[in-house]
Image: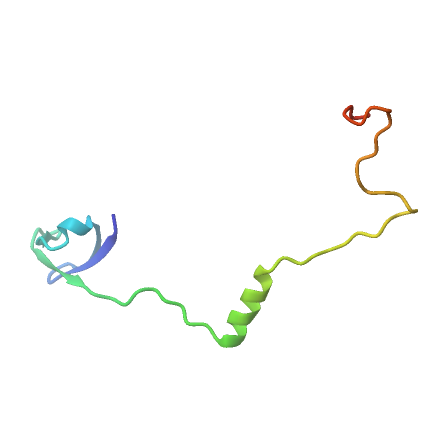
Length: 89
């Protein structure tokens, strides 16, 4: 259910959770029980500069990091037995 803003002439603004189907019905103020008018406000859109948008977009791409081999050894799994399906402990 979306949240809508209303303004009562006596009490001021308040927020009410209402289904989209029943938004056309008359809303009653929860405090003084008078009819309230809906407040139409712009959506919460954040406008960013081109530079900031580009930096955020570049940070989404994962960086590929490669490890160096230490002493010529392989970093993968080494089998200590003659059976590769058995994990050596």
